[in-house]
Amino acid sequence: MLEDGGSLSLVQLRRGVADGCVLALLEGQERYGFDLAKVLSQAQLIAGEGTIYPLLARLRRDGLVDTVWRESTEGPPRRYYALTPAGSTQLAQFRLQWTRFSAAVSALLDSPSDNGGGPS
Amino acid sequence: MTSLSRSDMLVEAYLARVRYALRDLPRAQSDSMVEDLRAHILTARAGQGAEGEAAVRQLLDDMGDPAAIRAAAGLPPISRAHWGDPWAPWLLLFGGFVFLVGWLAGAVLLWNSTVWTTREKILATLIWPGGLAAVVYAGGIAVVVGSPTACTGGSGLAAQCTSPPGSAAAVILAVVAVVAPIAVSVHLLRALRTRVDL
Image 1 (cartoon, each protein chain N blue to C red):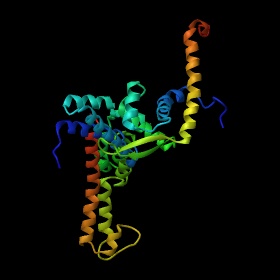
Image 2: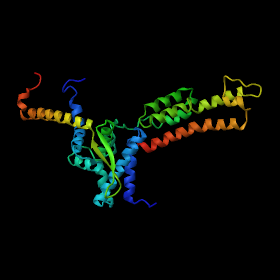
Image 3: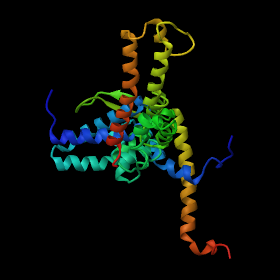
Image 4: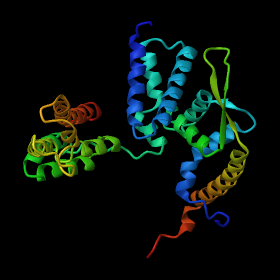
């Protein structure tokens, strides 16, 4: 379909960062929404704790996460989120893309004088 | 059950604003999101013992602006009310009397607006094309066609053919025909008042 890296536009990457981080947080352990929201909003990766829920709903629709209700010792049952196989694949891709992206940006930031002065 | 505390009312008001911000999502999706938010707020309040009004306000600030939640749901931002929005319901109702042009202008304003949902727009367009003028016009035809001597199948209102003029059915039909567009326009105006700051 798309060649390696071809699916990676800057816009997609930027929008996908929060998604990727959610997938990373779910790696190896299921979590509930409140927990995810706290971590991501403290890291300032989302614009408010509440915005995690539309994001999670989208990941769920895309089949990247699954949900399951679990009883809670303190209060009503909670909806837990877990990574699906498709989610794991997506996370691996995100890791790769992020590594390349951050390396590219770091390289540019570290040597601003090598970029040329634009068209002249 | 129990009466709502001031903090509870703040939470409900916030959730209502979120629900409104998500109004163009399928109902099941927005319901589920609002329930997720409600559970989140409950958990937060239980966790930090946040029962004071200040604590609840802080908590709601941390939840994020309803507009941000809307954006996270992938919906386009809502633009401000258009100058024509307050006119549309009135033109749809009475504009038909200004030839047909007034009603058409109302329909254009209606469909250009970002305030009303597509469902409301369709409803307001179909009940009735031409507005009250169409009812008056159709009523005139029905009286003529439905006179005791004739009952034509092709024109006039169907009810006129099955019941003599002046019958209860005809009266009910006429009342419904008049009340329906008024009700739709009233709904549009109320929706406008609650949804935007004019």
